[in-house]
Every structure is written in C-alpha cells, then in structure tokens.
Image (cartoon, rainbow, N blue to C red):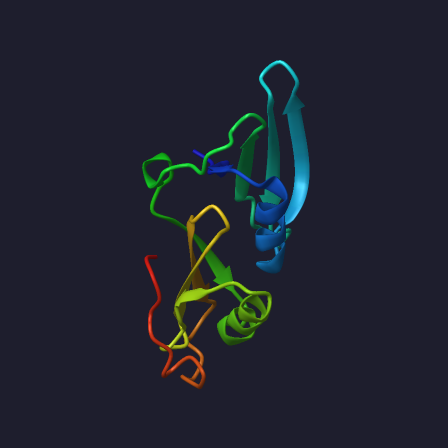
Length: 140
C-alpha cells in the first residue's frame, strides 16, 4: 500500500492555496472538469522521500461553507522549526489555535476550518515566549 493524498473540500481556492503555501506546500498538478464543475489541486512539500499530497477540491458552484461533518480530524505536518513557522503564520494573520508551548506541537486551521497539526522534527525545541504563555483559542 502507498499513501496517495488527503482530500479537503474548499470554498475559496485562492485562500486555501495561500494558507498551504505559508506551510511550505506547493501546487504539483491540477485537473479541472467543465462538465463536473470542479477543480482539483494537488499540493506537496517537495521534500526528498515525501510522496504525501493534499488534494484541494474546489466545487465551482458551492456557495455555502462546508460543515464540519464533511471534513475529518486533521492533517499532520512535520516541520523544521515550529517556532519560526508559527511566527510566520501568525504574522500572516493565521490564528494559532494551540500554540507550541512544549516546542513540539501546535494546531492551526485552514480558511475552511480544517485542523492542521504541526509537529517539530526530531527533539522538541526549548519552550519560549510568546508561545509558553499563549492560551489555546477556539477548536482544533
């Protein structure tokens, strides 16, 4: 068996692409169907040995946000520097729902409210501010 991808339905393709670009994922291929009225965008990290992909499905005629029942738990990404990435995300306006207080794990949410777990590669980083004293926000 080989893991292929995780699919997320998105309401605003541009907002979703901008969010995942902040996480370091890039567009590797696209497929659009005029008759099906959808676009699929496959994203990947490009890291050596990482074949996992996220498929963003944009249904052209969807006007209402998808309900939580149409998604799943979360996507998990291993990151090089959890503190630096959380700072970059926060500066871009992304809410850090569960800060990396332990230097190991954080949660953020995509524009479509999909939880994304960030896990520090290797050993946890030393705890530091502003993360140590930052409370959890919302659901994740």
